[in-house]
Image 1: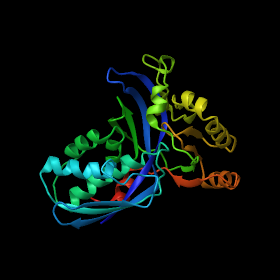
Image 2: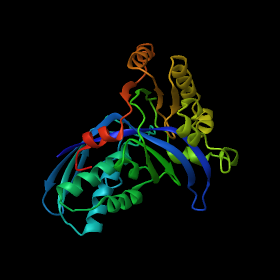
Image 3: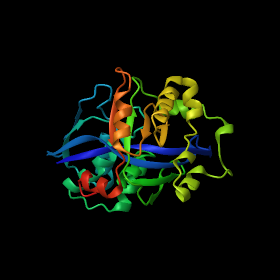
Image 4: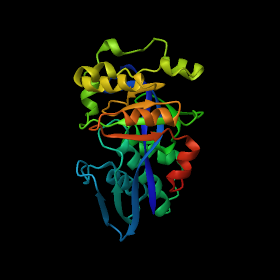
Length: 288
């Protein structure tokens, strides 16, 4: 069984406040895009779990979210069935695109089907939540409002598909390092939410990523990429999540392709598109 595992971008992110457990409450818009990894699943004898991948920057050991998802399914269902899993990476790690979380969600869906476990949507969502804040989103896809730590989801009507040009800087950004530097001045509890205003008006100009205040201080080159996309006519340009990927959404493919052609030759860039929920479910496979 081969399944796709799509990336996401954040169309805005608001910091609401810091929680007693050290995490931050946020409000964000998750949006799937067409950039995707591929995962191959094959049955194996009971007790056999093999995981391999083609990205040497990723740890393919028991700490990997894919294996954690497998073992969680085994513990929760009592099955001893085995699996051999191979991951072909296209979504770079540590760039704010949710690649590992997407891989974990794809694993839950694929093994639920391959092992005939019969878990329902609510049960899978509970398992996904225990693996990470972004994992539940990838059971839905499309456009979703994420609240609390990002795991309380409201699926929203999809936006029209838009070309998405992404630049991948040659370094990852550890998410904890960005949130650790968030000060009280960035919290927006009690303020009018620009995300909610966007959902009423459709004005992309309202959307902001609060984390950019921290990110640009530490990585000023990312602000230059954001400015470049805006100069080239992007309707929205932001760092995705905590970075390091920077994206520009364009109103048409010709504008996005022109922006890509004018990028410096050393830039690692990819042209994708936003992926509505129906298309996401159709392409994901594994009974999503």
